[in-house]
Image (tube, rainbow, N blue to C red; front, side):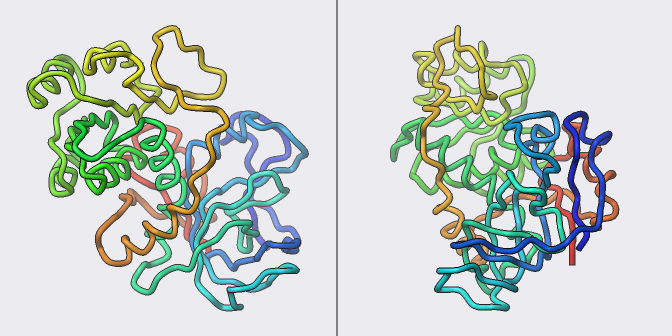
Amino acid sequence: MRTLRFHEFGAPLDVLRLEDTAPPTPGPGQIRVVVQTCGLTPADWALCDGLFPGDLPRGIGLEVSGTVDALGDGVTGVEIGEPVLGPAPFTGPTAGASEQALLDIWFPRPPGLDPTAAAALPMAVETACRGLEQLGIRTGDSVLIHGAGTTVGYAAVQMAVRHGARVIATAGKTYADALRAAGAEVTGYGDGMVERVRTLAGGAVDLTLDAAPFSNVLPDLIRTVEAPAHVFSFAPPGSTNELGINLGRPDAPLRHEAIGEYAQLASEGRFSVPVAGTFALEDWRTAAAASLSGHAHGKLVLQIS
């Protein structure tokens, strides 16, 4: 099978290779899928750069939609040929950006949810759900989602609205209208952002979620709330916290169970993660360059089969 992986750590465009290798064999509790689509995320490039070092080679592609073609020992409740989606393990010699991939965690892909839309869900849904949970969002809260044009931010806006929060979102023009349609009040980035947010909210917001942690605006976000601890940010591992914001608990459980719930909502047209482009597996380099530019404006998806 064809797979996208790296044999040494380094810049993704330098170390990644599209290679042929034997299909992986599912272990106990795993399934193998014929991959239809694979979402790309910043975590893929971090793995190439040495995040979570381990044995090499290592595959990339942490979001998978496909059909089941093999079952490991002890697996029940799923059948060969069933369409599924889920997060792919990232510690093996291959991962989701392959013609076949292993899954430890999976969910049925509901009828009406196409493979491309399905592959856009896992990381954005899990991350946004976990962030809002650690933020402590409650019905009636006023919540600022900064970076609502990112896939995580876009998901978080919809989740917060479903929680019954009043949502103010910072976003560019690309998704501003869609975010308003989802129930958010939207304002732009840049100079005057704090004042615009506080004007919309009639003062400080109760909580702020930073879904664009590399934008260096945390001092401004602190000014949108009453106390720094009311700001949650998806800061990278090892970040220091001189500002006193909420960086979450390092032992916080992953919220993978939300993927199935939001996949069902997506199939009903009540939730989405925007897809900015699809690429054939052999065009991975173009997709990677677009993602690494920081200006993809949505999920980038590899079409595998």
